[in-house]
Image 1: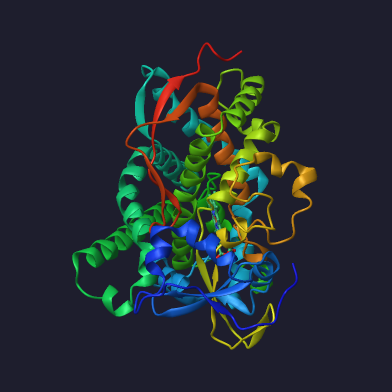
Image 2: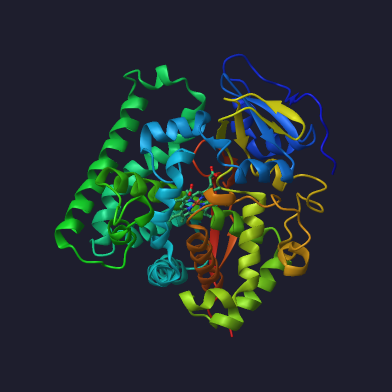
Length: 456
Ligand code: HEM
């Protein structure tokens, strides 16, 4: 594709005040896909804010990798900072490299091995019940996976804590924050400060989370030993580039922990939910996946060491992430006058990072609407342009939890496939909900049947 120098196209259908909020929230994927048919850079209105959406992989790549000019900001990150703070995911460019150096050891492969032990326990526990049920029992798949993913992120963050007590304390507030954060992007800040029940609930949830994290940090500091969990790694982190032995302050640790909880729970649950939904509609892919899982696992739950030997499972997850990227709408703001795809952007321009506008673009992918995990076979994936796959972002601000998330999703999907088969049940509504932080199915009811006896 050739980049053209022309005026930015404005997406049709904007309403006064709310702009494109209605189609974005009601039919987010169709709306995003429709943008790519209108140009390489298309203007949408996020509430009252005009935002430029790159629909061409090269333009998206530039936005993601030139993070000095396309800095975190705009309606999404302004709201994130106001609520969950200034952690590594939301801080501006000037603070980012230091924060990233300090959190990076938390995701070192040696630590990931320990986290994988928690992931495999949670995947096994989740499917233990399902397997024992009589065939035909219906479960709400996203809700079940959200519980498992939240338990996993909390247990990997706070290893020595009584898991059930921590999960009980955090689940309600985490859900409230996740459900409102994206929606707040469309609501003017003045309305968010009104003493309405919805605002009070949100503020209370943020306070409860901060208090809960504060108690856990204080407890770990009193104990003083590295327990192999994420919180220990954050407390122990030192960055000599910023002065000898400088580490994270307590309030910075709070912000990082909140970032991990928010970034690491519903995203994984949504990814695995979409994979299970897609597999049900594609029996040939499902058979292929079951063959791989049966050969490697022979009916047992997956373990951390199995992940590398499950390439078909990995491709199913990546393809589900392409079609339904959980993190589907983020914002940036330009810190200087710049040019993007032949368009002049003044300093202060809002740019939206909307992965489905590229992931579902005709011409970037062959038959983009089709679920085809084999497009991720190395020889085919190699031909894709940079910026074509952005489910984890890109550049210096790429998801810090990518390996963590892929390991967890692979362990969940392979363990579920090893033990059960899930079929869509009546009453399901698989339309994506855009209002929560992760794009997830509205109500994914699936009937479980045990695969025990069918596996080798
Ligand atoms: C399938 C699951 C996940 C997806 C699709 C995902 C996606 C993303 C995306 C798109 C970004 C970049 C946002 C932007 O550029 O504005 C991001 C950042 C981030 N994610 Fe994830 N994420 C997932 C799971 C996780 C998990 C499990 C963790 C941690 C336990 C995590 C931690 C982070 C952090 C810390 C950042 C900020 C990185 C930085 O700015 O340096 N994510 N994620």
